[in-house]
Image (cartoon, rainbow, N blue to C red; front, side, top):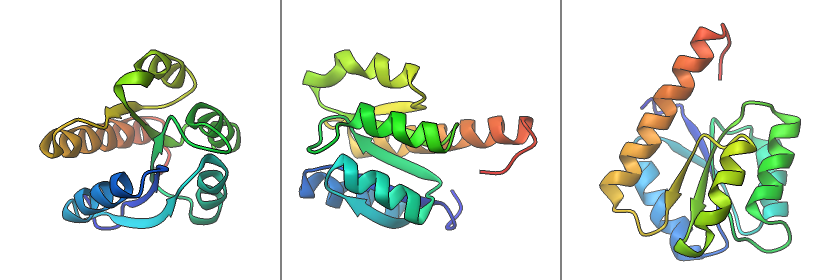
Amino acid sequence: MSDKVRVLVADDEAHIRSLLKGVLTAMKTEVVAEARNGVEALEKFRAHKPHITLLDINMPLMDGLKTLQAIQAESPGALVVMLSSLSTLGIVQDCLEAGAYDFIRKDTPITEIKAIIKKTWEYYMQESRAAGGKP
């Protein structure tokens, strides 16, 4: 992945944000912002225009699904990957239908997290090129 890929990490758990930031840094991406809740995630999405947004489903103030819907309303086709725990797998389908590209369970091994992010980015870029656009 290019070192110009900018990522927003939104999760209310500091250790999850820290873990993901480490994974993303190892992947040569730039974490442009972190958010602790859905309202902050939307504000930071607007301010930083990241290429990829990693968005937790369960967050205070505004949950991940509502945040995803707000992001998609403002930036249709934005690349958002949902973060979920076992207890939220039922809502993952709603998120995919609302425009999320993929999801990562929080108990996924780091090598698989990297593979999911890389695969999703490559798919997004192929779609973007096919549509004649840029991310």
